[in-house]
Image (cartoon, rainbow over all chains, first blue to last red; front, side):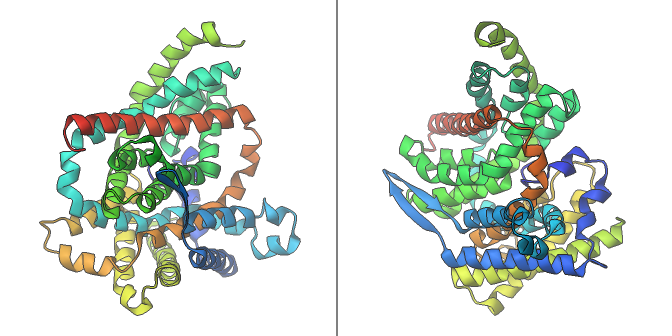
Length: 295
Length: 152
């Protein structure tokens, strides 16, 4: 839902709640926990020390936040990335570190959630006033179907296009499509593609997009609401960059609007995908595939 | 994992994340460690309640949503706790709370490298268009509705 990247296995096995949380067990696993949390501490200290960098680009800015350094450092240090080539690194940061890190994303989201609550509440009346915009922009998720489905068909994809283009595909969508069509179906592979691309590139992508989007002339409030359409980390990178790049409205208001949108996406996203997105994309596929499909 | 084991281990993890956040908040945003402790303590307390509620209440809501809700209730303009709650949590920069999440997220992606090999470049291209489509689709709708309402 609105929360996290990189926890696919958990949502696929949503019923086995035990295995999802097992890595946080500390007894007998002290050394793995020490390695995991010290690695994260080191990444955080280095990332925060570098600090936010901004590069002007027209009326917008390319903003690189500490969190973006952190995700890149984290990826590079993993046992299957640089660790696959450097034995000493893999010994210092073994597979267990990655396993512990997966549920820790959920735990580490708690401070951010509290901060968002404190930003949303003082803007409560403004947000209520913008209620209709919040509810309707949730349908923006469907905009992707009209843009990405034709492109997928032109690229020669078949039923993979259904899974790939149905929505921005965070955990709930991954769950729905996997449930409906099966994990090894073309639709299942398609949704996995969008999900994993989001996991690997989403934070960077939305972090850059949030800073440069004011170029389009869209109002920062509207951009802030669009920032909330993906995962919690996408939203934070996007809203953080937007707040850094624009001075038209207060930072707190941008963050509050993005967080509210993200919260609503979390609450309504499943239903929009299940009852509107999936039927719509299937209809559109049947219409478009004979015309522009390549197979 | 039973309830007691979950709560004790999750609390330990929250305290660790709290300490990492505290240090990041000092390095990046020049906040004093001691004066930031009450804010982090409140965050840890709300965090454990949120993780617990998400596990026990069969609504399939993420714990992130509970954390936002609880903090919101405590910080609403008409809430008696607003002043004191905001005074303490204000000392924690919101960007400082995001960095540890992404560090853990980055480390965990190694687990998905095998699945990544199933994905061809075409699906990556489609995914990028999905991001654009969703982002601008919702931004444009928001722009139109906010203009119609006279808010912007």
